[in-house]
Length: 558
Image: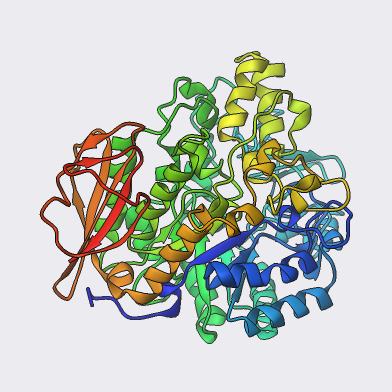
């Protein structure tokens, strides 16, 4: 079977829930655990196997839950531990597994460890975090945090700086300290004993820092690049092997690491077939294929993704992981814009057909697929007319740095960038029906509902046999029924075509041919002209000989 050992997490499809925006059960405008529990039958109907929950731990919400103040308690707005236990039990009864978001690169500055750590230089928790003296009257290094601004914050109480790769309210844990590691492993074991089914590990590649703490290359004229010194550091595989030995290997769970700056060679170590670290990782190459017009602005200098570049990246990950490591498949998540808006065509004419095309391309590939909430409905990006309409700290900080402080881009241009690639696009509430607030809440929603909810919502999708929802349902069912989709080897086709992404999957003498048209026009394609096999799925009921229709996708098994 293509050198692949069977595993439930290879055959599964994962659905990511961003709890704050999924479903509100009590009318306070914020999604919660009971809202998730109420909608579990919907997810069972979709056919997914695993639910990945973005953080639900106690948090002051400087970064929407990714700043944790207590790993063993539930965020007040989301409910109680009893609510969690009830949700977990109900999910398991419906055949759904629950994967938790593990955020252990950093904590909140309101975590008891950090409160103690900053109290004095000789406190027993001082070394739980990364403290440094300044250099030449400035921060210890010139590093820019992932969320703009300096990655160091001066603390007057003890006269030193602490490192925060993200916001200043997210101080980085010191993984060089064995006490920190053991405290994390104890917490992970506590959750595993509670019965959860795995961990998605937030920025896990950043645990090991370069011990030299050198300055980074300055690319925007302001700060130095932090990434080479905090991603995939010298002890990262040692730490994860220790975590695996002490916790992960003791349970039948799924693990996936968010690994910024990961290369294929590094991914083969993180997700190696001997199972000594993680099951799989997320890479970011394919979501960073925008043909940027302003390189100095990084992700904010966006343009539409380039198909040739995207195809080369995805094909590379498919072919080079073969036989060495397992891969993950995704278009969007809580940190990315909506898939159909970024990679497809979200106009009324082509939204549905292009959403189905993107789904076909991804779900017929090798690896574990991830569906982000609302993706199965073809939910789209928002348009932001003012920075005051935004919530995400990354967007707000970037606007302040590039527009207000350094005047590198106009407010209008920056808002176009945010509307195209900002994280808030993924965080608008799920559109359940055409009622007020899209059926998300009976109160005032914490964040703006996308105005197109009256046309795009779950109730309408469930009533339409040709909806994006039922297309996803079929794709998921096909993966469960056909080993070739899970375990077949991947072979690229038409690698120089301007408009078509095509490939084959092969297993035990069978061949699955997949072709997807990325253009809003008919394009020549002869791949299916002489095939007499079974068409597993297509987003068009009728086909044109020698041609793929606009955004047409086909998968034929011979």
